Image 1 (cartoon, helix red, strand yellow):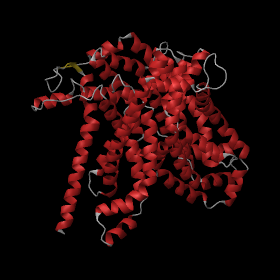
Image 2 (image 1 turned 45 degrees about the vertical axis):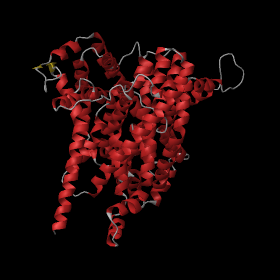
Image 3 (image 1 turned 180 degrees about the horizontal axis):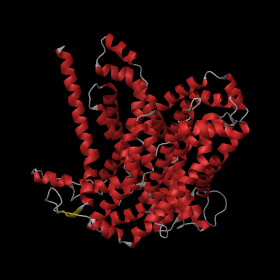
Image 4 (image 1 turned 60 degrees about the vertical axis):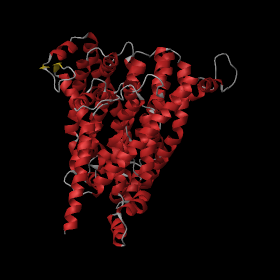
Length: 304
Length: 277
């Protein structure tokens, strides 16, 4: 991961000065004063609303004391449950495809000697610079029923094209498109950490490419893969724009469900329960991500 | 020798296949949009538009919702970027340079922001805004959009400040420069390119942000992407979506050119590992 590399660099720079560290310690109050406003903002826009929502879901109007009534209502509603399951399905499918594409590209970028790797890297990172709404619209014009792909297929005499637009596969394709750069970046950074000597040593004793991949590369890449999966899970599970434009009207991803409940049906407290359930599903991925990144960060004494 | 040449050949062949697949998947849809933006007539069987021109640019700019959304979007993005910089840059400097009690836990809490799924968080804020009467105000949109700027504005600048050699700052202080002088004459100029990138990333990403603005801004405050969303899902005229895509994309291309030098640098990657979208 890039974070470990950044941390290593930081250690190297900071190493010479015990005096520097002593001077830094004197800045305790100053440091807290500088971080204070950002922390207050973070509490105001992240922690407080999330906590308020979670707490409120355990109370109902006119009821006394905490209750699970809101959650019982969610899980007894067939539409709510099917939306939740649909979100899990889309997220799982997208993650599997992303991981396959990401690993393929990252492995090629790491081990190829081709002159094409520069161009491949630029194309793989390019979606970073394209907003979700633009790519969603572009994919309608490309894969939609009147788009370029069906037009080309028809002119080639290939019939039976099923457009992914407004189908679950439309949401999956759009989400894969959006998340390729992050996946490739994290995996490339992870691969860069694996020493060339370990791979050469294995090759010297006669290990084939597959054996090297399974026994040397993948075990050392586990942490990167964990970060890729947890970060992408959070991003995809809570995604809105791409599935809103490209996905089906029913079932819906949870974010779209919440938006309709809040903005169109004006049912704030039900939207809150939907939000709280999404938070709880994402809690595991969030904890794994935070732990993995924090361990690197704390070890290097460096953020990011 | 022959074996090595064969290996090189298959290496290039795999690269060519990957490159072609990426070009079709990543670039072709975007090329298609650019064509649509300048097409005055394009019927499905024709491989290219049959009439080109700027007709739909004029029509789109003449729409009241678009004309109103442009200043709104610029105002909100500017406010968010400035507020975020004022609040986050000092924190970034502190995380990079100072040792203070609770540093680790504060760091952890900022990393944990990444671990919140974005949209449910917006819903939580929207419910609070509803009871405070803030729905449909610029304040609400600015507050919602500040959430994800925390990540760009802390991690990228922190990495930049850390990249400045502390020995240079020490040297400045040794010859009698004050802390403020050291900051403005040594630290800030060296960190400037990365700070510029962070500001630009924040501005561009705020400008494109649609979900938070849709949830708490509508109906009274509509940013350009929110208008675009309604034009796309309403399917009124294909060119409207295409022209807006090309228009909305201009700031992004500026970013691409500006950030190219930092593109492969560690600073840039660090921003995304610590603070992804």
